[in-house]
Length: 212
Image (cartoon, rainbow, N blue to C red; front, top):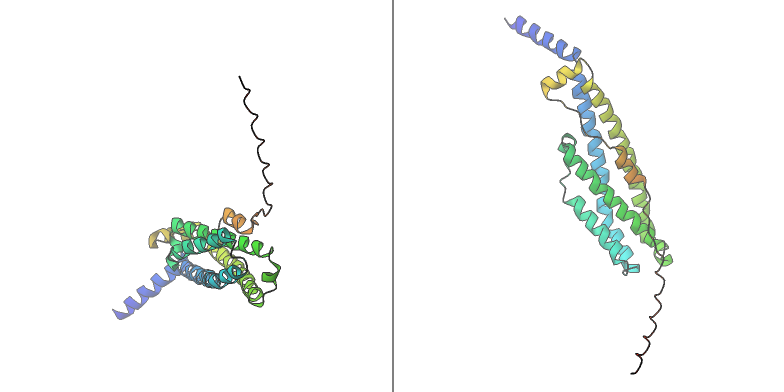
């Protein structure tokens, strides 16, 4: 009896392996690992922001709209619970990515503002923070690329025959990925117009009413 059970388990294992179950498991774990690294780098950027904002504020407090924009965007990111389960919820995933893109845009505007303040640009702390931010953005790009490739491979496996039958049987479904629109939002440079509006000429005094 025991031999039959062992034999049965071996047969089931062979069948699962042949129908792509093991591949699905392996690729799913690869996505989890890649996504964890994406979240790790996003958190690194999130943690850098308060010091960067405070440094800019020390030199350019009058740029309150830009500073407030960064703070608001950071709050929006912080309000979303970043968990591994995000990759299984397309709507939550999209909302998270949009918040991250808004934060990146706000940071880009902050750095453009810094260009108008030579003393700020020469500050050692500011240079150090921007160097850390630049390095973090590079790590985010690498982590995102790794996640994109992992999801692409997994989604092909989920859709292909006969592994698509196994995927349906065990509840595996396609996972959301970074869309072209996401990439455009990240790569697009924000436009900031520092031009001051032309002074408005004072209105000419009204002509006196004719006397009767």
